[in-house]
Image: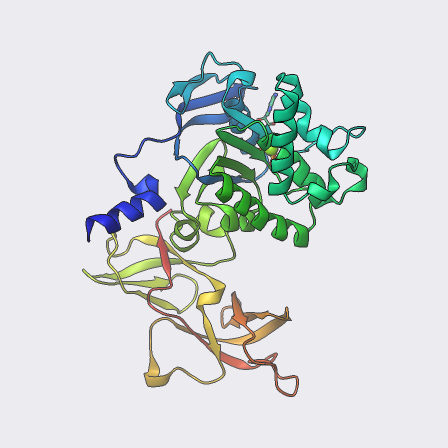
Amino acid sequence: MAKQDIDQIFADQPWLDPEAEPFVKIRSLTKTFGSITAVSSVDLDIYESELFSMLGGSGCGKSTLLRMLAGFETPTAGSIFIDGVDMSDVPPYDRPVNMMFQSYALFPHMTVEQNVAYGLKQDRVGKDEITERVNSMLEIVELPTFANRKPHQLSGGQRQRVALARALVKNPKVLLLDEPLAALDKRLREQTQFELMNIQEQLGITFIVVTHDQEEAMTLSTRIAVMDQGQFVQIGTPTDIYEYPQTRFIASFIGNVNMFEGRVVENHSDSVLVNSVNSNISFYIDHSMDVHENLRVWIALRPEKILVSDTPPANGAKHNVAKGIVDDIGYLGNFSTYKIRLDNGRIIEIVHPNQTRPRDGRHLVEWEEDVYLSWQPSSPVLLMK
Ligand SMILES: Nc1ncnc2c1ncn2[C@@H]1O[C@H](COP(=O)(O)OP(=O)(O)OP(=O)(O)O)[C@@H](O)[C@H]1O
Ligand SMILES: [Mg+2]
C-alpha cells in the first residue's frame, strides 16, 4: 500500500496508528460505591475529533465513567489524562471538558439567548464577545430566529439544541453527552442524530456520548465501547461490533441475531464446519478459525443475512441451508420479518427488504408454507464464549 494511502487511513482511523497520541487516556480507572463496583479497572484511548459512544444497559457504569471524566466524581483508583494533562488534581471547572446532562435542564425564565450566554457571563467574558459567540453558536444549531423565546415555547428537539449550544459555547476540547437524545421521540431523535454529527464534524470537538440505544450508537459513532458491569466488553467501529462481535453477549446486545449452539466437526486451513447441536443444520464457514474438532461453539447469524425461498436450493447443498415452515410474517412497509419454524420447533428470524410491491397481496412467502433458508459461507459468526 502506498504511504499516502496509509496516512489517509491513519488520519481517518487514528486508533489504528501505533504512533498516534490519544486525546483522552483512561488507565485502570475504578469507581466503587461501598460494595458496588460501578466502573471496574477500565483502560480506554479516545482520539481527537472522535465521536465516541459508550453503550450498555442500565446501571452498567456509563454515567459514572462520564462523571469521572468531567471531575464530578473522584476515581477510587486509576487515572485520566486529557490532552496530555493528568486530571487527578484538576477541579471540574478547570477541565477542558463540558458536560450535557442526562436531563438537560434549561433555565425556564431565561430566553434561548440568555441560556446560551449564561456560562460565558459567569466567566466574565466581555459583552461583545458574548454576543458574537452566542450568535455564531445559535447559527450552528440552526436556532437564530428563536433567540428570544423561552424554553417552554420550544419543541423537545429545539430545547435539546439549546442545551447543546450552551455546552459548546464555552469551547470545550471534549464534550461529554449523557443520553443526549433520550427525551426525544423516535423521529426527532433520528433527525437530531444527524444534526449532532454535522455539528461535531463542523467544530471538530471530541464528543463522548453515553447511550443505551444501540441504533443511536451505530449511527453516530466513530467507535463504540460496549459496557457490561463496569467493564468494556468490546471496543470497535460500528461495523466491527455488528459484523464481528466477540461474544454472544455483544452479538445479542447489538441488533437481532439467531444463535445456535454447535460443535466443530471439521477444521481446515481455510474453512470450518460446525454442526448445530439441536437442529440438523451444518454451518460451513469460509475462513480459518483458531478452533479444534469437537469444540463447543456458538454460531450467530443475522436475520438480514438469510435468504428465504419457496424453492429448494439448487444442486442439493448440504451446508448453510435449512428447511422450515412460515410461522409468522410482520409487514413493516420497507421490510418484512419472517419467523420460520424448523422441524425441532426452533424459530429462525429473517428480515427481508420489500424491493417489489407484494403482488395480489402476496408476500415473498406465505403463512404455513414450506420454505428453504440459505446463507453465504461468510455470514455465520463463530463465537467461543
Ligand atoms: N452515588 C452513588 N452511590 C451509590 N451507588 C451509585 C451511585 N451512583 C451510581 N451508583 C451505582 O453504580 C452503578 C452504575 O451507575 P451509573 O449511573 O453509572 O449507570 P448507567 O450505566 O449510567 O445507567 P443508566 O443507563 O440507567 O443511566 C449502578 O449500580 C448504580 O446504582
Ligand atoms: Mg446514566
